[in-house]
Length: 444
Ligand SMILES: [Zn+2]
Ligand SMILES: [Zn+2]
Image (cartoon, rainbow, N blue to C red; front, side, top):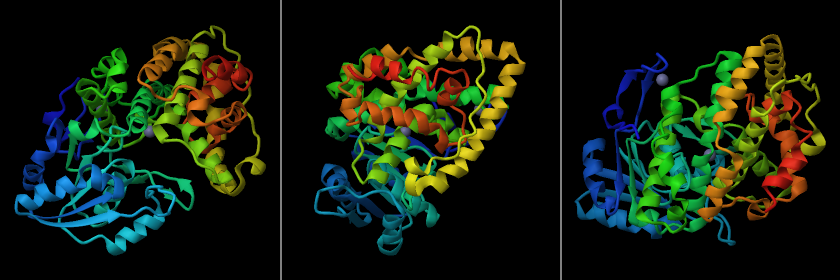
């Protein structure tokens, strides 16, 4: 693993892509007992002895109370804000416009904020701290997602999953004693989110080849050094060993770094994420629950890897004319207008990609051998998830065969970014082989 310590909190010119890069995170502390160092972290990075700590009911118990007593014991002035569950069914709070408005009104003002939690608390604190132009520190309670060290906030705005630009924390603290106690489905979700990288970085590179877009090999390769640790011993993640959780958490932090440095979510979010986002939107449409982001992403990554496997095998490609289909209101319901905006951009991209690939036979050869063939085989991804006790079948995430086939027909419509899903459509692998791939990879 590249040691990024020297780059944290700095700006530099990238030798790999030639662009200026910047990393807001100045320090990461990962280890057993890391919480004990929190007073020192605050002293180093906030310049004040007053902090406001945000948690929710669950993370307050997992680590929040200890954080408060540690900071108070060190003589700091500490305000605590615990988000309550929005309903009686025990659902935790969500990161959306409503909760953000509540926080804007009720979160005590402080020169520095501390997020004690995972995805929702981390994102809400990032958002609130950005609004108030104040630094914040992320104290992780689960190795469940890659947003701890990223600049982005991923809220739901008027029902639609959105990406807002914020600013990453000044420091990330991951106490392995806390992370190892997190519910297993959250840890397993974190594994799904890091495995996505195998597909998403290749999707990102694909956009470089097809459209000349920005791509940085340094960012794309940031977690390459850690990958063999968790992929080689996924049982360690299943058993929450120190080594397993540490490797997973470091990989999640570095994935967040990759997004922050690149200034885009592209290094960590490709076609496999479209599968998860579409499942989320279908659940909202139908008023039903959906599974954790990373668990759905893991299943999406198996599909993405299977599609790249098919693509790698196509020596002589025949390019299918891109579809000009209208956005299907019967399917998207109240999301139709939002999706149509993105879908229009995607139609344009698909036309450009088809024209470019058809006019340059060596381009297809390069996509096939330099990109598609480098993606982990679907059996490798699936085996890693299975051995870690993570979701790797449709039934694990509560999705029917019919529903995932719907996802495969529609998920390319929700983003302009070209992905493996679009590439598979361009050469006729989708929709033709959708049923075969689902039956082969996602049933058992
Ligand atoms: Zn670069
Ligand atoms: Zn993700």
